[in-house]
Image (cartoon, rainbow, N blue to C red; front, side):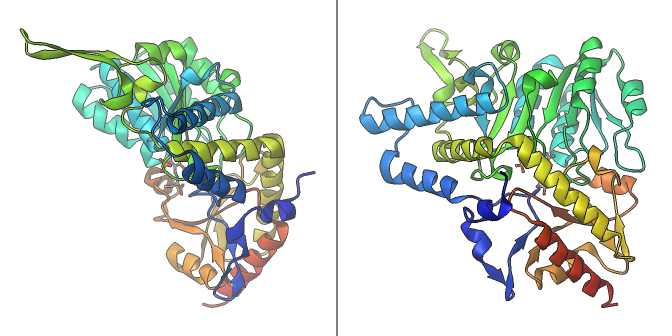
Length: 412
Ligand code: C6P
């Protein structure tokens, strides 16, 4: 039985009061809270196993290495990857996207090529491609978004010409919670000879995601949005692609051999095996250990149950928001095409003021443009307030949120 009240007992921070109100944390799309199982795993690592990985033969280094490799394996299982060779630890989704831009894009994209993304992307899935396009001369194209925030399939198909070498698309919008049909997009892209990069920052923490089922070539996500520590994220890449790609960063762990040729006064370098070829320097070992605990926690809950819980909360919140006449909600009204994220504005209020007023009730939401300005431009608004839910949120919290919003509505 999925019981959010029981789950809440694992999250020490949820016992806090803020401004004399019990904390209601609705900023989960920005980062999630951490259960004691993750906090304990991090503490235990530093108290008992701390050492560098893959470098020494002593007991502590062996233990740290074993934990670090096991973390890769757990993540591979969690997303249905074939093996841990396909799992590269990075700092987060942003770094994973930059890795693909520079390790794959720099060497495979040229003038005349196109990269197709969309107007609902987070800046992290726009900016690296725009920067690289200035160096390589390819074009970045944007599939349009319908007025309700869903992706325009028509625009996507129109833009998917034979010049497109890579389709970079978010699985779930961090503004509206819209879930894109990436399986169909991947099928269309592959039929057209393009590779598919899926930004899973807002999907992997909230629903079952299987890379084989999606048939994507790359998938990126961040540990901190799925109960794990900050500073650890994942790039999944199909093994054949990762094998052919050049490294992103140079140094340390990613090297097999560096030999100096005195005649040429140069070093010849060969790369380490996957996934270490992409993990230069001392990695975030403890972050990986914490993330492994997070993934075990989520797996025990069942990702189908996580999804169902968040859908039910969203449904309840959307219905209750109809009681607030001064509130405009953006994105689709049908909760079947979205998951637990609700962007809105209150007539007469700036989104930051709404967030500050809610904070006085102990309710944490995000305000601004959520690193997705093109989508806000599309909605013709400068910013929005955003509530986003997770496993420990309850209907009761949503009811308190609605009551607070009703009071705010009356404040003007
Ligand atoms: N979105 C939000 O409040 P990082 O920062 O690298 O862990 O994740 C970047 C990122 C990429 N793609 C999507 C779809 C995202 O939602 C995010 C992070 C946070 O919406 C912080 S801006």
